[in-house]
Length: 157
Image (tube, rainbow, N blue to C red; front, top):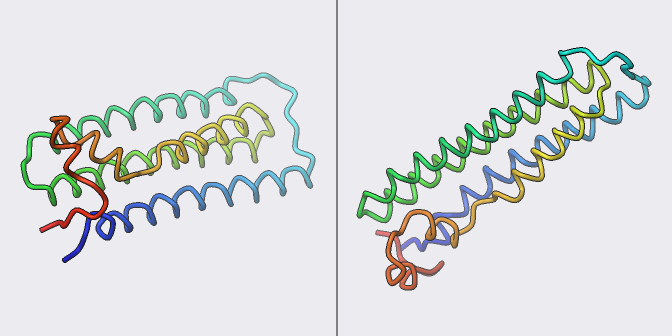
């Protein structure tokens, strides 16, 4: 019988892959742009588009996450709760990764350090919002007494 820990491992692997992909792209494009000495002295509007996309993505990903979690709270089947949480985490991570990619690409094209800093901030936010069993239980199980009964060795039917 699979345990909650077994069911949770694929979610963590996908999240780790999304974070690692963004991390390596940030490192690669930072290294290439430093070698090319790309700098931008003008303060055009295009530099702030990445920041705007990032802010919208951060807020939108959280709203999307919470809406998916609300669906998980109304279901009584524990496997469905895991699936709703998995979907919510992947959607949230993908939206954040997209915003991070846009910002690092804008940094590579225009050389604005604000875009680089924002892509790093998004990466740290992704790492901070990593999926854990405790968070899944906290977000999907309503009653405190039910939360206490569930742990990583809980058997998922």
